[in-house]
Image 1 (cartoon, rainbow, N blue to C red):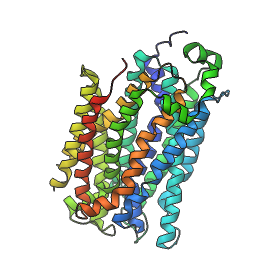
Image 2 (spheres, one colour; image 1 turned 90 degrees about the horizontal axis):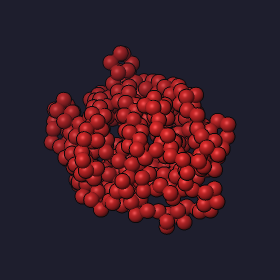
Image 3 (cartoon, helix red, strand yellow; image 1 turned 60 degrees about the vertical axis):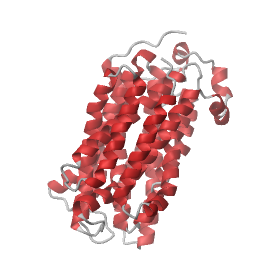
Image 4 (cartoon, rainbow, N blue to C red; image 1 turned 90 degrees about the vertical axis):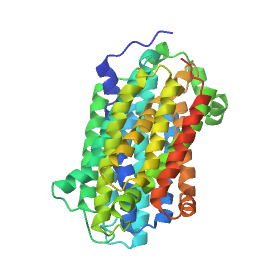
Length: 433
C-alpha cells in the first residue's frame, strides 16, 4: 500500500472550501429557526419539538450518503455528486422556508409548511455536509489530517459568522426587521436568499477544483480490499467499531444536547435577560433576535481564535476537556448578564467549546478507523452521535423547561451543566496516535 501524499495548503483548502457555503446555510437555520417558528405562532414549551427534524434527518441521511458514496464511482467523483445534489436542493428550500408566513395560510398550516421545508432543508444540508468530512478521510494522510480538519473548522466558523450576521446587517442597511403578526421579517427572508446564492457558488468552486481519486488510485492508498469494503452492513459495522468510536460518542452526547438547548432557547433567553420580553410580536424581541445573531457570530470568531490555540496543548484530551469546561461556564453566565454588550463574554467562552467540538471528535475517530474500511459509512454512522443526543434533548425540552420554572434563560444553565459533564467524559477516550 502506498503512503498518501502530502497535500499543499491550497489543496487542503479546496477540499473544504464549499463547507463555507454549507455552513452559512446551517448558521441561518440554527440561528433563525426558533425565531421563525416563534413568529409563526409556536408555543415555547413545544418549541423544542420543531428541532427534532434536523437531527432526525441527519441520522437518516448521513449514513445513507456515506454508504452509497463508498460504492459510487463516476467521472465527477465519488463524494462530489452527493455534495452537489444536496446543495442544489438546499438552495431551493432556502428560498421557501422563510416565506412560510407570507402565503396567507392559517397558523397551523404555516407551521406545517415550515416543518416540511425545515425537513427538506436539513436533509439537503446533511447531504451536502457529509462529503466534505469523507473527502478528508479519503485523500489526506494521518500527518495532515488534524490540519485538514482545522481548515474545515476555520471555514465552518467563517461561514457561521457570515450567516449569523446577515439579519443584523440587513436591518442596519434598511430592510424591515418587523412584519405583520405571523409573517417573517424581510431582514430574515433576504438573509436566506443571499445564503442560498453563496452556497451554490462555493460548492461549484469545490466541484471544479477538487479531483477525486479513481477506483484504482484509491485502492493504492487505502489498505482495505474491495471484498471487505462490500461485505458489511451497518449493524456489523457498529459491532466492529473501535472503542474510541463509542467513547467519543459519549462526549458528543452531552455536548450536542447542550447545543440543541442553546439553539432552541437562546433567542428567548437573551430577549428575556436583556430586553425583558419573550413576545415575538414586539420590536424588542426582533431586536434581541438580531443581536443574538451577532452573539452567535462572536461565538464563531472566538471559536476560530481558540482553534488556533488548540494545537499548542501537548495533551489533546486535556485541550478537548478544557475547551468544554470553558463552554459550559459560558452557558451558565448567560442568564446573569443583563447588558447586551457584556453578553459577548459568555459567547466567546462557548466558542472555545464549539471549536473543540468541530475538530477533535473526527480526528480521534478517523485515526481509530484506519484499516477498518467503510470510512464514509462509519463517518455517516458517527453522525448519529451528533443527531441522537439532539433528538433526545428535543423530546425532553418542554418537560425540562417546565421543571426549571418556565424560564428559557434557565435552559442555558442546563446546557452548561451538560457541557461540564461532557468535559469529564473526555478522559475515557484512548487516542490512537
